[in-house]
Image (cartoon, rainbow, N blue to C red; front, side, top):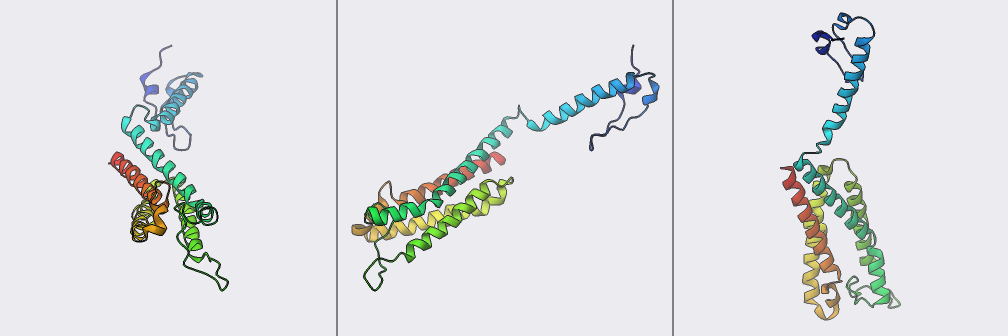
Amino acid sequence: MTLPNSVVEERFVCSTSTISQQRREDVPGPYPTLYVAVLTAQREFNMTMQPMNVGDPDAVSVGSAERNLRLAMKLIGAGNLTFVAFIYGDRFLFDSKAGYAWSPDHYDEHGNTTLEFEWMIIFTYFGLGVCLILAALDPVLDNAKWLINFCIFGGFGAHAVSMLVAAIWDYENEWGHLMPYGDVPLLFAFSTILFVLKRKYELKQS
């Protein structure tokens, strides 16, 4: 049986998964209902598949750059949470020569080293690590651009520069911070990784 053109011209409204149909009565019997069901299934399938943009290389490229940036934010954030282990390990196991604890300048009345400076760094970077991880989980990554910029140029970049100058100035006591395993190269690496990946993400978006 050949269906009239009026059925093909039927109008569907899918905003609430309901169908608005025009001139359905032109076809007798159960055929219009069956035809509507087939067209509805095909339309919903096409609507489901369309946002995937499987063949769009730009969309794939942006998605890859975004995943890399999110992963870096999570890993660097997790690294910030572990600074307490590195600082205390350096202080009590390596006598501040492993590149994470600075020479003690604070003593109590019994001559024991106090750790006011260390705890300030530990809590600051712990909070920054939590913020980086939460920002990486935000569905809209652009919301984190100012936090990432602060990490690149402030929390990691500027801090690394200040420590670099201090370690060179007092090289005899602070040389460990300049070693490849020390905190100065580590913060420069964090800053550089975030800068490069953020820049790639922004270029893919443009």
